Each structure stands twice: as structure tokens, then as C-alpha cells.
Length: 286
Image 1 (cartoon, rainbow, N blue to C red):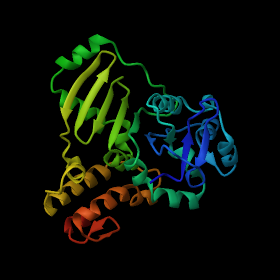
Image 2: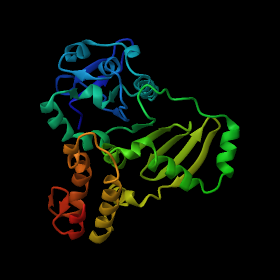
Image 3: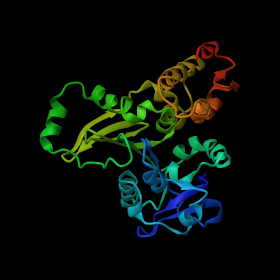
Image 4: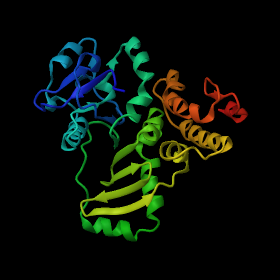
């Protein structure tokens, strides 16, 4: 799988939006960005989006310096990992085109599931720069500050992204995530471990304990051993989280969780209709 469009980072002086079906891509790795748009002014919004009016210019090439600070730093991380392509929703989906949006939102789950890892920008808006990690004394306080596992999971589950509806499936479908936080801690999360680091190095490491990930972990690593009731329980917890989140457009309520539904369907072997599984009467409650 490749998304319809990607940003080609080969030349940082002249980035290009490419249509993957029309491009010979040898290295198919890419990194998606999970972020909040915030409330950009019109000039900022124009700089961070692709529209029908500027699509041709995006395809021809544009400068790195024209983008918001968050995008620039994410792109530099991507290049430091020797990954040539990146996916950012506001640039890779044509904004203002309902036709393009409907075709792209159907693939959103796969976009995050098939990326090398996701960069999750847990800051309030796209022009808030990422700060360098705090020095050693902060790391020592982290070590001595009580239940670190709960503290780090709190960073992930109560971050700005945790309040946004679309970001639920972006987290749970991504195989690996680099979380960047306002407290200047960088957290790496995959299906097996969570690690927290700052400038002093690794300050925390643990097995994944978030039980909403249990279906994902089982599906990837060994034959599914969870019962149907346990899988439905996972779904209920995800939906309980999802219904607390905000969506800019109410019409996104079902599309924004459809990637998780498609991932669970082969495990449940059960028909799904508009947010409800046929064999799950409790699903009617949301």
C-alpha cells in the first residue's frame, strides 16, 4: 500500500508533492504525521495546505522554509532516519475538495498502519516549535517521581492529540509512534514496549500495558487467542475513549473510526453496520 500522494523529501531545498500512481518509487517507506491543526490565520493555512488552486505548484516543488515549524521539524526527523517520503494530511489531501476527501478518508487507517512509524506532535498548534529535551536534573526527577509507567501513559492518553477523534485510530493503527510532548519528553511506543527519553538518554522503558492495544498485539505476533467477548471488550474501551473526543465535522464520526473497524473485522468475523457489530448488543449504547 502507498497513499495517493506523498511528499518527496529528496531535495530539502525543493520538496515536491508526488502522485504515487504516476511515480516510480523504489523505496516505499514513508512516515506519517499525526498532529492538530490548531486555528491558523489565512496566510498560515495557505502555507500548510494543498488546494485545487496551488496543487500544480505543490507538484512542481516548494521550499522547506515556507512550511510551519512543526512540519519542518518532522521532515528533518524523517530525513535523519533516511526515509525519503512523508505523509501530512493537510498537504497530501486536497483541502476544500469533497471528492478528494471522500476517497482519502477511506484509506486513512491504512496510511497510518503502513507507515514506518508515526510522528505524533502532541503540541497545541503547528507553529509551536519542538523544544530541545530538558537537561539531566529533570530526568532524575522523572526517575524519582513515583509511578513512571502511569506518568508516561498519562502523557500519551491526556495529550492534545488524545482529545481529537481522528487521532484515536492514528495511534492504535500505527505500528510504532514517536510522541513529542510539551514537557520536552520524547516517548517511543510500539506494540511491545514504551520508552521515554530526554537529553540524558533513556529514562523509562516498559512492556506495553495499555489493554486497548491487546487485540492489535495479538493479531500481529501470534494466532489470536482472545475470545470474541474479550475482543468486544477492547472495542468498547476504544469507543468509550473515542466518544470523549472532538471532531471538527460531525459527519466524520463513523469515518474517523472506520480503520479500527476494518482491522477488527477479520478477528471478529462479524458484520458491522454504522458503528455497531451484529453480535454486540452493547454497541447500540453509543
